Length: 175
Image (tube, rainbow, N blue to C red; front, side, top):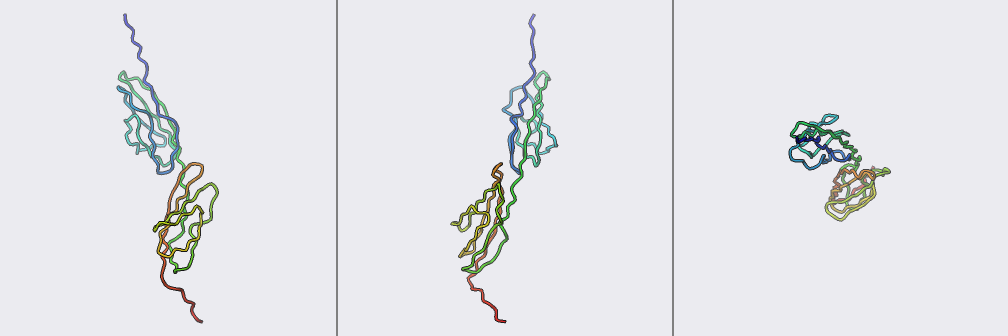
């Protein structure tokens, strides 16, 4: 007499992780031949890239728990869960588009907030700053780009503004 013992399948949803809002992460592990997979989530995420794949991509907008149910060829099942934490993006205030005359300066951005890093660049190239609110004096119309990074999570967002430079001198009006 031969006795066969069918071991249940192994389910591995992968490690808990964190993403930034609008980010994507991959769940699970490589597939095992003969296993089928079914992913579900709380709250319900209807955008799981391949809910019947062993390692789908997800882009939740809120912290979500994903559970994979693995079924083998004998109909035996196993489950495992993973939590994907969604971190918010920083608020980016580059300021508003504006117009200045040649020789004038203007302040960009807003007052720095603790816990964030700031990085400015420009087109045409040549301007960089790590201040939240630098003062600039462009001699040609320039587009400025601000990237703000949350120090703890690394989440970042960007904004831009255009400073138009006019080649005329402002004149005072006589009263």
